[in-house]
Length: 329
Image (cartoon, rainbow, N blue to C red; front, side, top):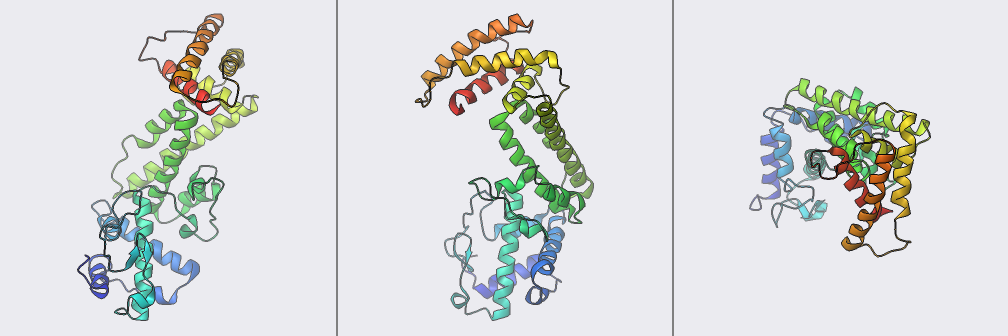
């Protein structure tokens, strides 16, 4: 590729990705019209069997297939460095119209890259009215949480079903990232509901099945937390209740709440006075103290307790919770 001229590279992409497609609309369309044309082309490429080969091929002409935008060649025909297009005057071989089309192709390739790598991106690219949410320091990640109902509705209604499945994967990925840090029972629920038998995304019916299962799972967990809050439980108490059950979601029972609150109080009581220097030695001492109390609490409430049972999810979830409690407070 690096031995191609910019014009040869443009023709190379046209031949392999846009054969028979009139790209003149790129020169005339703006705003939502251009966005629609872009999504139409990406959906066409993504739905091409096997498994959207041409959409991935286009992305691979620019970057390696990982979450970091790593240029494939040191001397890319169009890119100045990493993901930035060269300025118009740096590509004199292309006329104004060709340069504009080249910039559009690069943007399409970048969106394809983000979708294949499940990397959050600016959701404005998906539809008129969608807005990015930047509450976290990691750019765009907050836009792909399930509580972004505008994006959820877009996934349910957009005609671009292959793209919607990839967007849904990115949302599920972000929810699982949250669960890894906050509730391993929820993490396991997502893993089973979303990732099992993902199917062939070259097939429309498999895309629809993945979207349906994933959005339903995320809704179930949202409702699970909402019901817990309505019962007067905070997020940590909900997590501990899920630990006791060994799975989530489940039915709430007020008879379980005293044990949950005893467990949370024991974990809080043994935390070192803040601020403290965190260490593996400190974690072991903290865990030993907490688990000594938990054994008594389990016996008090008639709950099963067997720390040696490697197959018991409750014990594994407790280990993860104690670890998070010590390191995150």
